[in-house]
Length: 313
Image 1: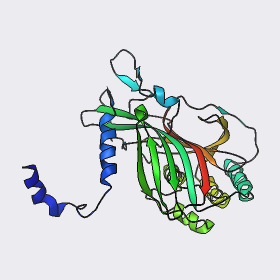
Image 2 (image 1 turned 90 degrees about the vertical axis):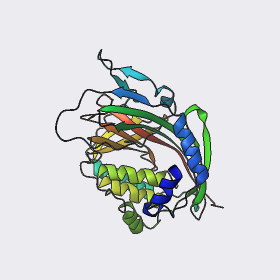
Image 3 (image 1 turned 135 degrees about the horizontal axis):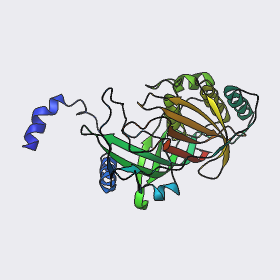
Image 4 (image 1 turned 135 degrees about the vertical axis):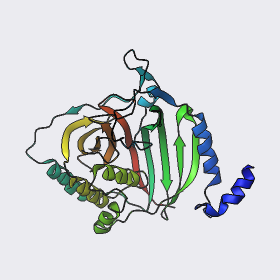
């Protein structure tokens, strides 16, 4: 019967002519089946407009934090539970007369003066941590912790390989293909604004920045362009000095957006000397909607550990 239905409906399948990576699909399915979901039932939501919750709310990364991420914390005595989330970073106030935008643009100017080895290829290493949540019609909520280590090598033509290590140290290696972002500042600025969510929105800026930094090492000029674009975010704030989740000291800049359906603060941790982005954080600031987390809560972060230019062979 299954085969008969497939034959009957094949002309209505919009993806029937698309060939995917069968091996990667099998690996992804095996990984998904191994991950145990953390399920919690929440009280019925208030009547009215239902918040839009996207699956995989966060970018995110973890090393040590990932080892405790699967714990479930009690929520009162009602039998419901909170999904465990990482502790927020500690930000130290820095006295300055500059606006957040001016501070970030000054770092960008410093980055533009640097001279670094360059090459068409990239060798990258980053960690992701995220809380992926799905809300069902009966108000039940399923939360899945995703913590992964990524090591990527990209060649001059954009092809490459990625080694991904997830829960239980399970490792997968698969091929990748990336069209490198342009080096010219004007062209890169246009590239940053090509996404479905505009870069002028904090969520759009976070997603596009994450996509870029996960796929290629940036030159000083590219870092300058990226920082100048972030500096133009509406409501940009300077959160102060911070030690990131890899123990490195940086300066934190953030902006908020409700485009995901929940008010979220998107933070960029920047090396003030090189202009490199050390990490990104996402935190719910006012309400968690139907998500089984307290407020405020870090719902995802990324730690960029290495971004090295290579000969690209």
